[in-house]
Length: 263
Length: 237
Image (tube, rainbow over all chains, first blue to last red):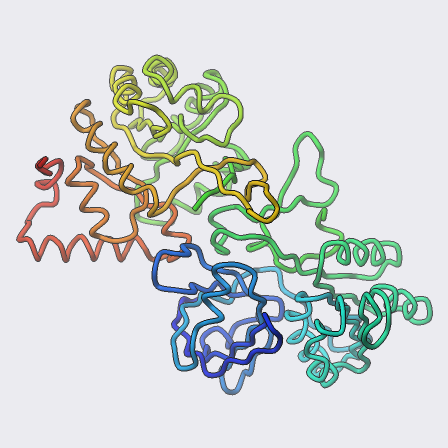
C-alpha cells in the first residue's frame, strides 16, 4: 500500500544546470518500493501549483531508508521543488504504480536509457547486478553537457556504453544502435528501457523482432498518479479501432511489457 | 485544474461486474454518475441502474468534454427538463441532476430539473477554460479547451449554489473547489445540504476525512449542534 508521508530532505545536489538530486528520509516507502515505482510530490503546501508532480525513484538504500530522486526543472512545479531546502519536509505519496521492473538474477540483461529517462533505470541496474545477472547498460544523451551519472551507472553495470547524439562525448550516435550491434553478436535475455518516445518505439520494435522479452517505462502527464483521474491513458497493443482499450500509466504502469502497449 | 480527460469508462456492464462489488465492501452510500449522448442512452442506462443495489443516480448533463450531447442538454430549462423527465419515468431511485455552470442563468436549468421531478441538483460541474503554451503558441490541452475545477472555481460555485437555493425547493449538493472544512461550510451557508469533493482527492486522498474534521471544529467553535441548522443561513449585505 502506498503511504503519504512527510519526508525529510537530507541532501540536495545540483547535478546539472537544471537537474537536481534529492536524498530524502522515506523508510516507509523504501521498505516496499520496487524498481520502476514512482512517487507523487506536493511541491508546496499552497494551492499553486495545485497538483502533485510524479517523479520516478532513482535510488533506494534499504538499510538507511534513504530514497533518492533526480528530476529536471521543466515548469512551475519542478522549479518550486528545486528551491526546497535541506532539512525541510517534503509531502510525498508512494510507492506508486503496479507495473514495475522484474529483476532477473541470472543471464544477461540490456538496460537502455535516454536523457532524463535514465534515472529510474539506476535502481533496476543496481538490484539486477546484485542479484547476479550480467547488466549491459546503454545510455544515450543529446550532447556532452547532458551526460549524467556515468560513474554511478558504471558501478552497477557489467558493461556501460554512453552515446551522444552529436558525438561530443563517448560514442557518437544513438544508444539503440549500440544495443543492436551487440544483439547481433549476443542476445540478452531481457531488455529494459526508459527514455524519449522515439527510442522506446525503436526498442519495442527491436524486442518484438528479436523475440526478446522487454519492459519499458512510460512517462505521462498525470493529474493524480493514484488511478483516480484517468488522465494518463495509453492504448493497449492491438486495440480494436472501434473499441479501443486503455491502460493507465500510473496504475498498470509505469512499467509495461513492450508488447502490451501501443506507443 | 484544467482537464480534457472526458468521461472515459468501460461501460455499465463492466461497472456492475467490477466496480460495484468493490464499492459494496464499504459502509457508505453509492451514487452513480450517469452520462449519455442521446436521451435514449440516458434512459437505457438508467433502466439498468434502477436494477442495481445503489443508493442514487446523478445525471451528468454538464460535462463540457463530450462532443455530442451533454452540453446541449444541460444548458437550458427545456433541455434539462426533457432528459430528466424521461429518466424519471424509468428510475425509482433518488435522482440528482448535475448542472453545468457554463450558462447565463443557472436557475433556469435548476428549475428544469425540479419541474421534471428530480430529487436534488448538484452544482457546479467544471467551467469551460483554455490555457496556452506561450512558447508553442498552442493550447496546453490536446482538446484545446477543457473543464476547470479546484479552488479557482469555488467563488463561482458558491454564488451559483446561493442563486439556485433561492430558486428551487429541492436539496442542493454543492461542489467546486472544496479542500477544507471551511470551504464546505461556505457551501452550506450558501444553501447546500450536502457537499462533494473531486479535485482535492487527487492531491490528498484523505481530503474527505480532513473536511469532516474541519466541519466539526467549526461547529464546536460556533456552538452549532446540528449542521443542518446552518444551511442557507447566509445573510446578504
